[in-house]
Structure formats: structure tokens, C-alpha cells
Amino acid sequence: MSESLPQLPKLYFVKAGGYTYARTYKNKWVEKKSGKGKLAVKTDAHTVGRIDSSDGIGPVNFDDSFYRLFPDLKNFNVVRSCSDKNKFVLEIKPKNPEAVLPPNPVIRVRSIGATYLLENLTARDPMLEALKDVFPDSWEEILSFAFYMVLEPDAKAERFSIFADEVKLPCSGKLYPSQVTRLLQSITADKCSEYFADYLKRLTAGHYLSNERFWALDSTSISTYAQLEEAQYGLNKQGEDLPLLNVMFVTDEKTYRPLYFQVFNGSIPDMITCTTVFEKLLNLGVHSFVAVADRGFFSADNMKAICEKGYHFVICVPFERCSSYKSCIMEAQAAMAADNLFSLHCGQDVYTAKKPVEFYGRRAYAHVFYNKAAAGDQAAAYQKRLKEVEKDYWAGRSLTPENKLFMLNNFLHNENGVFKTAGDGRHKHLLLDKAQYQQRMSCCGIFLAVSDTVKKADIAFDAYINRQNIEANFKTLKDRMEIKRLRVSTEESLQGKCFIAFLAVIINSFLDRRVTQFKEQNGADSLPHHSIGAILDDLRGIKEYYFSAHHEYVVDQLSKKQEDSFKLFGVKAPISHYEAGLAEADRTTAALKPHGEDLQRAIADFT
Image (cartoon, rainbow, N blue to C red; front, side, top):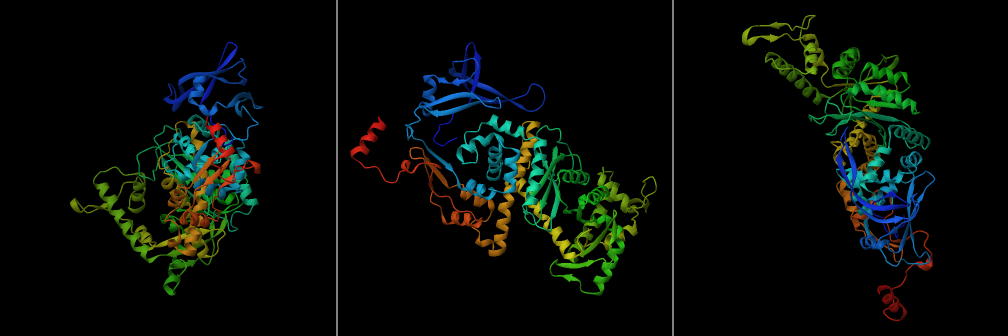
């Protein structure tokens, strides 16, 4: 909608007799009488006009009371028609289309700087192209909501309409809370899968991803008070006693770009989810890549799924599973004792086993890293845990499943799980499995990574370290966007809220990567501000003034830091301009004269 057209209030239409009556209203959210969530109910309804037909099609004849409340609409006709999709639409047209200037000029002031930057960063990106392809009728609203989540901490859906009034966004026109709810509910799981297939295909065809194709996998938990089917109690990584949802991300390590996400039941542990994700990626047509994962995903089912589906891996072996690679570790320890194998690049001793190991039907390279500083900390933590679980056992305290398994693995017991003891009275103690103890102590400081495709230890090390980029995406999700607790009013809105949050994290990754590169090249002190959030907050101060009398947009003068911020991201700063397609004759180029025809015209317009 053009900036020069006024905005309609909320309207709904009721048929009665041979007329269709127009009514204004307000939305009020109330709890559903049955089921979960809230329902929008129309309140404070007032009849303000009518259409002289029972089919609800034709010009709306508003009452004088309506024009007193909305004087900007007095010189416009509002016509209700039916589109090709059998949906009713309202069109606003000037009553005098021959007039060059509207009789009641409008001046609108909105924040432009931050969204102007984001629009330029996302223009022609596969993320945006896929969004337009899959959501042709609502991509502007979806992208605008994603901008809102990037810019506004604790972005609540009900505040989006207020934000849209104050900030210039890709979508035009006024957005109401009910429209936002319908938007979220229109983003279904089917549409999301269709989007990922399109998005990943465009990334591959356009060579947007590095040739090395190291993709990090990790998950995080998000607590929620909402009563959602998928929200269940599980391992809450935030340490809160609340139901949670687990969210898995797949991120390209070199570009920081998130590629895929999956929301799953909060009671399902990380280790089980990996198999399903790889099955979905395979069916989405994803080309082969190297999956880089932490020890939490190391399981027989996961590794078998990765290998069978033609993907590759670099994965950390859990500390308690290192004994399966005892020969590789002993070979590395002997080599490290005989020679100085310290790597300046890795900051620790590095060794690759001479013979590949058998790994779920594939040959894999075992890379052994030894960190002397970490060795002492791990040994102390292991010994402390042994003492703590034994103390809890004698005190009769309830043990977690993890601690019960830890005891069975480290203390002697019979086939029935009854622990063996020695001593008596105050000196009674559990018998330690000394072979296991010595094995664990000898592995302290050892970090073991296996890969079926990476032959060099330093490359495997970089791949594992760079997976921390996915942690930056989670930090963006929880800290910058403050989604530590997911707020959605209905089950139907969950998928949409998560999908738009994913798009917002993609956009933030563009900012994060550029800032990281700039700091590496020029130092942190060269940045305009200390953080991305501070940069965006400063740019939000740039205002654009729209003058409908001349169809002109006037942009505030930029400060030196604001100019530097646009240069940082390679974006040209916004400038004042006229409305697109405006004839040269309509432009104002000189001030009006304080006498003669200009003065007479001003008096006539005013009166």
C-alpha cells in the first residue's frame, strides 16, 4: 500500500436484510472453554457504515461519526470486493484521482536504519529467495517478523503490531495481533520441510557453502510455561524445573550459517535424535557433508545411520568410551613420551594412529590430543565424583540414573548389582575397580576424535573447535533474542514461531560473521560499537520522514559511527529520495514564495 494512503481501522462485516453493515472492533484474548490456549474475541463493536447489497460487495458508505474519528479517510472511497481466491479485500482509492496532491497531507516518521541494513544483507540471498518461493503471499510479513526478532529483545508476538507502526519493514500496511496469530499458524511443518528443500538446494547450486562442507550438529533445550504436547520434562540445560522443548541445529562451520533445525520432544535425549535428522536430510536431497558432533551424539545407532546414508563425520569419543581405543591411546602416549609432538596450531600434543580403525563398516582415522593442563582438572573431577557418589550411597540418598551407572562402572559388585565392601564401622568403604580406575586416570587429558574422511589431526581439531560457531547461534537465540523460555499461545503457533526464530538466527549469523572477520583483520577497538546489539540499537535511531504532499522521503543526517556501521557490513547508507515512479513535475525543488500565487494557494488550502 502506498505511503500516501491512510490506514483503515479493524473492520468486520455483518449481513442483515438487503444490506451488509461495517463494524469497528477490538480484539481481546480469552482462555478457551475447552482445550488449550487462548481465543481472540471481538469486543467494543460499533456499526460505522454499510454496503447497499446483501452479498457484501460494493462501496462502503461510512457514517459521519466514522469520519470524525478517522478524518484521513474522508477524501477516499473504500470498496469491498472478492478476489480470485474467494477472499474479501478492501481497496482504498482517492475520491478525486485527478488530484496531484492529496488534500490532507500526511507526515509519517519511522525508524529506518537497522531494517535498511537487514534488508540489504538479505537481498538476493537463498534464504530470501526460498522464502518468496514457498510463502509467496506472506513472505514480507514473515521476513518483517524475523527482523523484529533480531532487533527487539524478548520479541513477543502481541507487540509486533506496535513495532511495525514505529519501524519501516518489508511489509506495508498495519498489522494487528490477530493477523500475527494467523501468520504463525499458516507456517506448517509441511511448509517448513518444503522451505528447507528449496533453501538447501539453492545454497548448493549457488556455491554459498565452503567446499570443505564441515557442518556442526548440536541441540539445546528451551523451557516453556506453555502447555504444549511436545513440552516435556527432560535434561534441562538451563537447570530449570520446567517442561522443555529440544531444538537441534545444523550449521555450516565456515560461514556460521544455520542450515536446518528440528524441534523435538523435551524428554528425548540428544543421542537418539541424530538418526532421524539424517534421515530427513537425506530425503530433503542434501548432498554429502562432514558431520561434526560432540560426544553427546556418539552412539552405535547414530554412527551407523551416518555411515549408511553416505555422510561423513568427525566426532569426539566420550571419555568413558576411550577404553575401546586403548591401543590407539597407548600408541600415542608412547610416541608423545619419545618425542616432542606439541602442536603450536592446536596448543597441545597431537598424534594420529598409524593404522585406521574399524568403525561401523568404515575405516576411520583416530586422532589423539593430549592437554597437560586439562589432565589435572579431569583427574581431580573424576576422583571427586568417586568420593561424592560413595558418600551419597552410605548416606542412603537417592541416586540419579547417571550416578548409579557411574557406580556400577567404577566399584566392584556381584552379578546382582550388590557392591562389595571392606572394613567395618566408620572405616567401611566400597571396593574400587582398580583396573577401571587406572584406565580412566591414564586417559585424563586425552581428547580422542575419529573421522572417516579427515586424515590430518590439525584439520580434525579445527573442525571440532569450529563447531563452537553453533554455540554462537544458540547464544543469539537465548541471549540476544531472549528465547530462554518459549512463549506461544497455541499449539498451532509453535511451528511458525520456531521457524521465524530460525530465520532470525540466519540473519544474525550474517552480522556475526562480518563482525568476527572485521575484528580479526582490524582489532576489536576498530568496531563502531562493542557489540552487534549496540550497532543495531544505534542504527535504529536513524529516522525517515515521509511527506505525502511531495511524495518525498527525507532521511536523518547520519553520525560518524552510523556511517562506519554501514561501511562495516558493506552497505550503502540510506539517503533522502522521492517515491518510486513519481513524475519529475511532481517533485518540489524550491521553497514557496511568501507572496503572489504561492501565498494565495496556501491560504486556499488552509481554508
